[in-house]
Each structure stands twice: as structure tokens, then as C-alpha cells.
Image 1 (cartoon, rainbow, N blue to C red):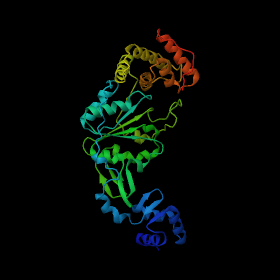
Image 2: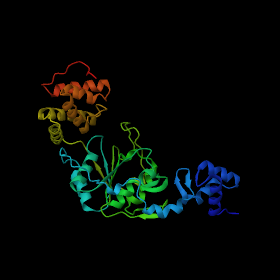
Image 3: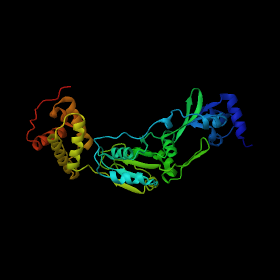
Image 4: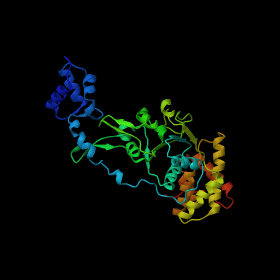
Length: 358
């Protein structure tokens, strides 16, 4: 005889209480000579987490709709602050046009680390006074992290929107940062990337996108993995998922002249204005990058790394120390080669053969 949902709920509740876990369900299945898959399918509406069910969750749904989220996100100002050091370069103007159009146009931006992909999106949103919700993706990111789930708040189980739903409802810009670190769990966003919204099966509610909602994804690869091993942890993304991004921008490092403007802005902001040092750093980085692209070396100095050097210079007041502490992340041979190269670029630079003090 088929077991009704009502009977399963009543029996489980009598034996284990209103909150049950997978071990409880498996034990109950053994006692009642039925399969785990059959029972869990009937309990789908009561699932509150992986291997967890709240048998009274349906009774709480009406309350859930009017209850506040666990965090009052709707009261927050999510427009990024303007950064006076920002210099327009790369795909910035195209990103700004996409946001300004108000058309739903998911955009994938790929490029080496530290070349301003995320910064360009943030500053485009700042200039256009648009809210931005940034989600840092990892291999562990799942549907609960993105879409939302039930949270225990003041002893009650309350539905809490995830960042994707917040962006959908607010008509905000959603930034999926480091998307190529994701697992196949990211496929829960398929319908959203089609501009169709999403049905929240756990609470029986459809969320349609508000006008202005937009999705950007950034990555160090094109979603095909890292062949050279530079970006360990990146994954091959599902082809159907990638196909839902109509456009892909390739972000390169800025030209030496643009990069010099960036560094001069940063140096002015931290009180160590030195145009000559900024120029030498950009020339140095340009040579390193050309050698990297030609396959001569395996490491590269990013724009972000140059900004780190300027900030370190403002802290220590010593150019050599600033450079050394900021390139210590490279192996000793590479670090030494980089320092010797700078010594040749900057004729006024006198490298001291001593280790920087702690």
C-alpha cells in the first residue's frame, strides 16, 4: 500500500519530532519497508537543508513571507563609493553602456589577475548610481549561498534571500566574481541568466527580475580551465552555462601611459607623489609582461601589484624595500631577476644586497 505524505509526516513527527535528519528518515524507511528515495520525494516541500527536514515548515510559510530577512539588506545603500584614483581604460566604457542600456545582457569578463576587471564594474556602477551586489564564487558555493534558504532567527525558521534574489528584486547589478572557481552547482542560475527569473521551490514563490537587473561574471580563464596551471582551482564550466553569456570581454593590462596615470593618482592619494618612480615602475612591468607573453618567464607583475608597491612606499619611505616586500610572493630566482631588471630600468636606483628587515 502506498504511504501518504500525511502518514509519513505524522509517523516521523511522533518518533523523532518536527526536525528530522537523513539518519532518522533512513531508519524510518527500514521500519516501514520502503525506500529512502520514495520518502524524501514526498518530503521535498519540507526540506530546509541538505539531509534536513522541518515537518512544520508549511505551517510557517505564510509567516515567512511577511517576516523580515535575517539581514535587513533592503535598507542598505549598495551603490559603490567613487574612487578618485580610478582611470578609464580597458572595457570600462562598454561595461558602462551595458549597464546604462537597462537591457538584460549577461556579460563575461576574462583576463589575468589584478588587471581591473572587478574595479571597472564597481566604478561604472558608482558613476551611474547603480546598486552592485558582489558574490565571490568558490568551489563550495551552492544554491543555498546564491539563492537563499531557511535560517534560524530568534528560534524561528525564516526564509532568507540570497544575494542573487536580492539583486533580482532590487534591479541591481549582480557580479559573480571568480566564476571559473565554481562547481556545477552554479547551474542553479540557468533560468536567471536567460532573464526569466526563478521559482523558489522551497517557499513556492516566483521571483521575476526587476527592470535594470544585470549580471556580470569575471574570471581569469574563459571557463575552460587553466592549461598552464597558473590558476589552480579553476574549473571547466558547463558549456550550456557559458552559452548564456552573449558577450565575452577580454581585459588586458593597461598601457604604460594609462598605468602611469593610475599609479600617479594612487601616489597622490597616499602623499608620496613621485611621477618618475611611477613611470619607471610601469616601464619595468611592461618589459616583464612582454617577456611573459613571449613565454620567457612564468610570472607577471599586475597593475594591482604596482599599486601595492606605491602604498608600501608610502608606509616604509624606501623604494627598494617597498618593491621587495611586494614581490616576495615570487620564488627567489624570479624575485632577484625582477629586482635586477628594475635596477637597469631606473638609472638612479641603487640596489642594496641585503634582505629587508621584518
